[in-house]
Amino acid sequence: AGASGLFFGGHGVGAEDAAFVTATLIHARLTDDAHPGVLLHPGAIVIPTALALGEERGCGGEVFTQAIAAGYRVMAALAAPVAARTAARGMRNTAMFGPAAAAVTAARVLGLDERRTAAAVIFALGSSGGTLQSLRTGSAEWRIQPGIATRLGIAAARIAESAESSDLDFADRAIEGEAGFYASYVPDWTIDQLADAPEVDGLLGVTHKEHATCGANQLAVESVAMLRERRGWGPDDVTRVDIELERAGYDYPGCNSTGPFAEGGGFLSRPLAYAAIILTGHRVLTETSLCVGLADPRVDD
Image (cartoon, rainbow, N blue to C red; front, side):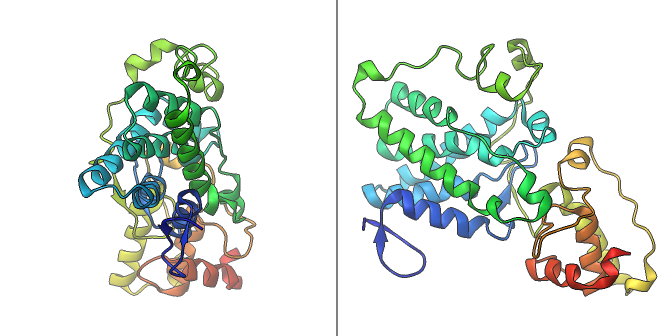
């Protein structure tokens, strides 16, 4: 029992539980928001954290809004120096940088000072991680990764809030150092690479996905759906689809996968997305479209 409400059921639970459930619901169909510049989904982590902890602490609208903005900005800024390389290696940026985003969101709601906020971020990053393998194969664990990130971030912020000052010490250059967070995931990392990191806007760089597939696939899938609708294409009219993408989107693990997929899987597969649109005739790619496409024997062709 607790003070944070759930969208379904009408009863209150602890903030960690509420954030976990809300994050999973937001992310479950892979049509939440996305930041193409750093290949992650901030809203599925930041907003549930602000909602759950904000309700527990009774924060006002100004603090609530600032907490969301802080979470979006910090998540994108932390990811920017390494995002393309970590994703190419099969790491899931949402799970890697999500705990830190949840931590800074929670820190703002809790009213932590600069030092305690920094500690919360470092504590959260120390437990971060997650891979893209489930999205490649179609298994379900990707759906709970944002929820786990909210739990880690809230826990880190609570520890930073309650710890004695002497317990707030954390490693110098814990993020960018020779054995820091970046170097652990990017083998050739050096601190000099920070100077080449792209500047990203954590808020203005965010978009919302219409189709239930990877953000890197959105424009390509939209183009196929639009052309199919305008020209009345059926499955027998299409023999080949050629597409040009930026390298980061093309290389994103799972996007070029042709299966085999688990039932209801293949959310990242670009070929499956095209096939589902053409086989079903749906204007918008949904989870239902993917399931229907997978059940159609012609998808193997």
